Image (cartoon, rainbow, N blue to C red; front, side):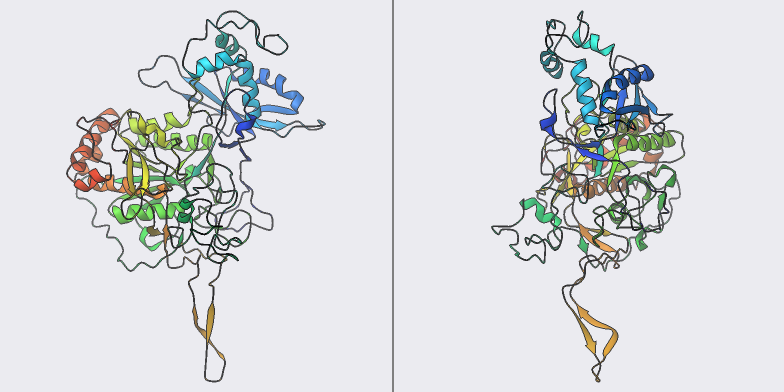
Length: 585
């Protein structure tokens, strides 16, 4: 990403995403079924301790494509991270190295770097027999598979002898994609189909030429013969839950005096940052050392092309989340880590770096965090695989917070699908320490929002549609439909006096309406923090296992006292178990 100050505007050249994203086409999968996802095209994650030997073997294979693999030393510790084994599991730690796919100069007919092409080629060579792949997918033993003829003209890809997967492991490493993790803004009709704009191949906007917005040439509304692609798309449009300015006349939430003992509860937000807002000028700490990139979507809402005057799709996202926390739990402090710019995406490995650093800072006592709110996610192309490549980085990153006694709240996604979104899908399993929740969205009337993802892995539901919260004072390029200047008695225009319709993207009033599970998650995070506001000693219960046990016990006691919490799916079961299903409403 260009080295620009956060308050500087892009120049004449459009600002490109710092990572070249690619969309996985399932039809291109060579080694079995795969689902669509978005990933970094120019990098792969190598799993294995002997990275240099593996890299040499891989380079020999990719040279004909005009590629060269080099260690990306901007990742982790000199290009690699060490993932410790899960508690109670056999086996040692995993070493993950990030490799860049670099085009070789002067090579005729060079192929554009594509990580999925490389991952599939290595996967095919590691497990050339489809019977082996199928058995591994189903968790069955592969040693009785006769691999004497593995294709390729009757020649095996690896030396025959012993277990097929073990033979291949000695030659080539496991590789994984570096997924694009998106802030989960509502795009119900285009799940993971594109990395630009609002992540939709055909965003509806305000002025769609087919009348999908307000001012189209053939406005059909919601139920016309040429209307929205999906009824869930209505949540994107102003007036039915889509982002639009709104006036708020309520007083500023009172923070109250500092507690006489203990401290204020703390919610950490890992998102797009927090911009300027009258309600958020105290009690909000922006932790800049962990920031990924240099441009803030909260300060500059129009960084990415097309430069058409429309605000970037995630501009103000983090501020809106912070505003929800401030409304529901005004006494709580907010820690903000900005991990994305205006394109709304961050590489899985970069997010791991940020989360790992934050977890270490919590463990060292640099920061006190009680609830971590995450409104982001990605879809894995093969979540059923058991080869150790699925959620290799993200799961240990999230588990580290739970083990430290930090409650983790994760948004479920906005694609109207039961396809599991990471990291929210982790909540279907028992948490290793303090509880974790995956949160779907409700409508204002309490029904489940049509755009919200759903399934047994969504453990909790909170209001997240047509929410009102804070926004920086953005002013986009759209204009009111009509404007009438006031004239004086002489027929001249009275300066500053005119009447006009609503300006659809003028947020100088500091408040907006918006929808998404992105906002249901902080709603829950704030509710959990508020439940502990009268028991500050619960937040100072030490660290790790001791703290996790006390946090869960206190949450169980507080939430059971409010019948409304049971309706939201927050009531724990009869056992104090972080993994108890808290309601698939």
